[in-house]
Image 1 (cartoon, helix red, strand yellow):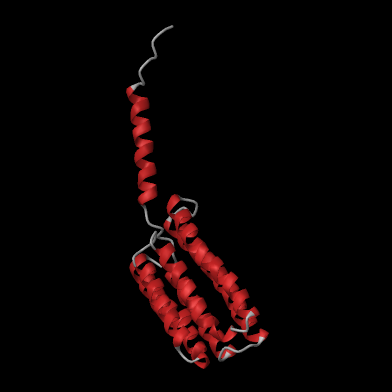
Image 2: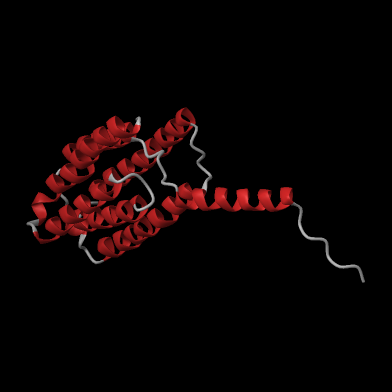
Length: 196
């Protein structure tokens, strides 16, 4: 049986180069988070807070906020895709996948707890729950993004914790401050520092 031929220098170099590329992709941050998308998401939240008013055991209040959440997701996805295209950042790279896998569980927990809070007639406490869990999702996903993203998540979590101990009637103020004000403020900062 003939001895195995050692790999050529070219094959060895190509293998090393692939390893380096894979390592860099895993270490890269997800930079396509759109600051301007965050500003628009914040603006819709302020409008929704004004339209919905204080939290109450009313399906209309919940429907308004769920509609705003769906709109915010659409704005975020479109704005991120546009920024990614403009900056040449692939949306299917390892950094984007890590961001998504870290972000989604907090949102999923929010969906489950929303159903539980509604069933148990705790709707007036949803603002704190939503802010806390959205902040958790942003902080977790932000660990794979630019530094301002997890900072925003921590601020949202703190606001959510405050909302949970504040009088329920102030819930709309916390929603406007978190989903509106924080999103707008951090969105502007992200847009200025990271190109949109």
